Image (cartoon, rainbow, N blue to C red; front, side, top):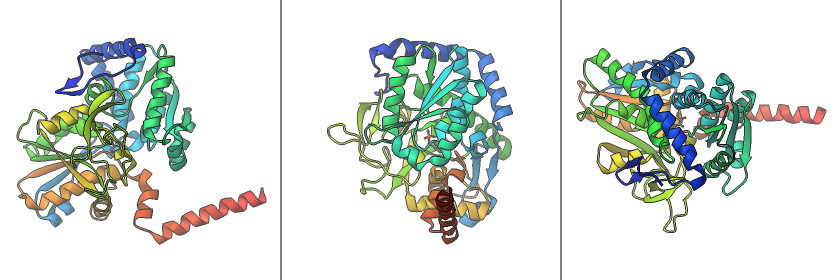
Length: 414
Ligand SMILES: *Cc1c(COP(=O)(O)O)cnc(C)c1O
């Protein structure tokens, strides 16, 4: 085990001996790339021609007035290709894969968003691609699986354990151990063994670097508070890193409060008190686990925040109180999303809507001279099934029933 990659007691690289040389190779490639200005320039060129960077900031004129407090700005990561910030990390790792001379990428995915982003990167770079996904998630997330397969990825439905994300991660590591010579594991968030938390945060720092300058250009001052939702922690690390050294800027991470504090049905590792420190999936952080270290079932209306662990860097920033952690409940999140759609015509993903919900709660207590910035980590096209169900839209229900009936008809006739 190596000594680097610790953020106070959190992080590390708890990996099987057989992967040690692969992690060394990755870390060396990452450090060389980080120290090579031409690499970051290549990354910027790629992101500006393939994924609409720099993404703009948008002022919420109507809601700022309606809420009567702080002036609200939004960083538009929803405008990225594939609809979220995930592509920032994935494209960076694609360039690194090329640099290491590897020809195949693998990834884990829960809801499928990271799988789609990785399959996109593989298609663009001409890599072979295998995506590991719990069988349960494959069944739930057909639209994402459809696009991954169209892009040429092999989607493996993992039937071990609970057939969800953590089982997919285990399978991806198993693949890597067998195929490390030609394969890179493109891990999807700021978690896992070192150097992933740091490397993923570095690629995502493009969000914060842009946003800080954009706020200065637009308002002449830094925002008072900055909000981001926290699943594994990559979009939050990306935005926060732009303001980390600005002590006057308060950083707020918003986790999935699910059915609320004390319900046992949430994914709030830092905002509530249910998580404890442990080692799993190759790193040390706060996990939602029982006393024997068994991972608990988590719940959130948003699949992307529904995870037992959290970035070790964020656990550290929680303990040092640089970042304040809050949680938004499912009900508040759906309401915040509907409000944003109705009042501003923006459609934030359910994940991102956690950050909006907390910001809407706090903005009225602030003065109109104060600015806040919310990271809109993604858009909600992918959430249409969940949201339409959550608000019980009758016309959507009729549409699904008719669609199903048409298929049944076809089956009878064919
Ligand atoms: C995956 C996802 C998240 C959660 O991941 P982080 O690593 O915590 O950023 C948040 N928002 C959107 C839109 C996502 O797709």
